[in-house]
Image 1 (cartoon, helix red, strand yellow):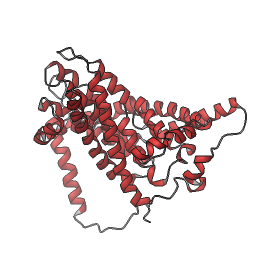
Image 2: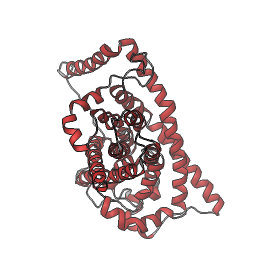
Image 3: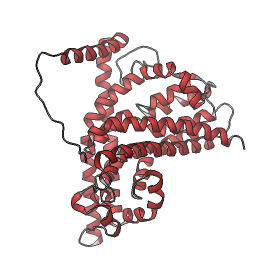
Image 4: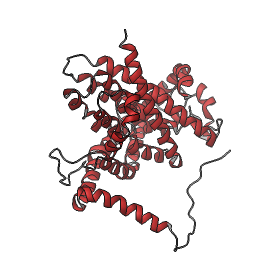
Length: 392
C-alpha cells in the first residue's frame, strides 16, 4: 500500500535547463503583471495586499480557529461529537463517505470560514472517528461550506429592480453547493483511498474508528476543571493553526487576488492593496461560450463572480449588487452565484494552507482538481434546479 513520504532532496548538476526555465517563467510572469500595473505599483500592491491579508484574513482566521478549537474541545469532552457520529453516520456515510462526526465540520465552516474545520481535525477525539484516507477530504467538505451563512444572508438581502425576493434563489444555491460538496469530497476520497488504503486508522495508537464508535476519552476531574482544560487546550490549537497558515495564505492569496482583481475604482493603478490585472475574469470571458450554457448566465459579465470566488468569496459577492441593478443578473443567476461562491469560497488560496496543515501537502493538487469539478457541478446543479422549480 503506497504511503506519502516527506519530500527528499537530491543532488542536481549546476549546469542544467531547470534554472533557465524557472527564470524565464518567473520573470515572464512578473514582467507581464508589471507591464500592466507598473513595476512600482506591482511591488507596492504585493506588499500592501500581503499586509492586509495578514491583518484582515489571517488574524480573523486565527480568532475563529481559537473559538472553534475551544468549542470543538468542549463538544468532544462531553460526548457531543460521539453522539453526532452515532446519529448522523447513516446520513453522512452514504452521501459523503465520511463518519457522522464530519457534520460538525460542515456546521463550523458554514458559520465561519474554510480553515475552521482544521480546529476539529486536530482534536484527537474527533480524528478517532476517521480512517486515514478520510482526513484529507475534510479540506474539500469544509471549503464547500465555508462562508455559507455570510454568502446566503448577503444574497437574501439583495433586491433586484423587479423587487422579487431572492430567498428561493439563495436556498437553491445552497442545495447546489451541497451537491458540489458531495462531488468534490467523493472525488478526493476516491484518490486518497488508493494512496492510504481504506483500513488504516487516522491515528494508529488510538485504535481506529471501530473503538471510537463504542468509547470516548474524557479528562479526569470535576466538571469545572474539565471545561477549563478543554477550552484552553482547544484554543491553543487554534493559535498554532493561525501561525501555520500564514505563509500559504499570504503567498498564494496575494498572487490569486492580483490575478483576479482589477485596478482601483478610478480605473488606475495606485499600488494599493487588492489591485490586480483581472486575468481570471478575462479568461472567464474567453471561455464564456462554454460557461454561459452550463450556468445560464443572463450576461457574460456574470462569469466574473464565480471566477473571482476562486480567490475570494467576499470579493465575489461584492460584484453581485451592481450586476443586479444593471439588469445583467436575475434570480436564476443569484442561485448559481450562491452555489459557486459558497462551494469555491477562495479555495485556490486556502486549499494549500489547509492541506499543508493536515500534513497532506502532496495531495494538494488532487484536492484542488476535485474541488474545481465540485464547484462547476454546484453551479450547473443550481442553474437547472432553479429552472425546474420555476416551472411550478
